[in-house]
Picture (spheres, rainbow, N blue to C red):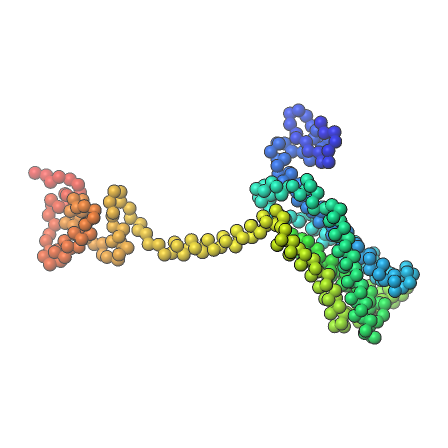
Length: 373
């Protein structure tokens, strides 16, 4: 019986179903345990670790911007974002992409997982999520918050026509949504149509809600709730704002890409090696197919086959005429296989000069019968 375990697995059999009722997973045969552990269990651990790392990262990047803004507003509890952006950030703008990654993501296919059981080892040793990985996520989130606050602050401070609180809030919020969307794209290892739809759809929904909530129509209905009237349009039409957003995104993402590239090159994990080997094999398969096609096209083979003798293969491929006389065919069986082509050619030349009719003995010899008396 299962009394204590992280995950209980029961096997339904003739003994009863008590173990199945007390387990988290159940199957009918013990051989299915290999697939449950090496494929689904390992994928589940990978997805959960990526989900937690990204969750801490995006929330630290979102929250720490308020901390840096406090030094400039006298810690008066004024928020740097619009109040509706704070409400919708974790619910709408950044929830679906990480949900898709937590459901569909995988590092290597299931066949490679079964062929390399050692890929299960990081889960046993807690290598994908531990204290070190947790503090790395926090450090990355703090670094992102510093970039998202101080680059727009330094850029818009010199623009007299845009040095206002509302333009600054829209610029920082837009930069945050774009940066976390690009980051979830880098963390996704297995792309599906749902991942594309959630990531790019979340960006589209952000701009739709942004322009909708700052429209003059809602301001006329609720003047005390929607105070950023037409600010999104007036801010995002400025080239300086888009340059600031692009600069913030590049400064946030480039160190992450460089770190992962160096880690992959200097200290790759077993999953990285298996994935690289799979990519190399996929590139080599089309080359082998092309080489096989070229080899088949260049070969010359005959469709005739004779046992224990050469046959007409060489004569067919040489392009010579195959219409032979009956006298040549009658003497074919008594000749050796090495000089039969020369003999046929000589006799054909003699028949061309002095043609002779075919006798009945020759016909019988061709049929394999002895002449009758």
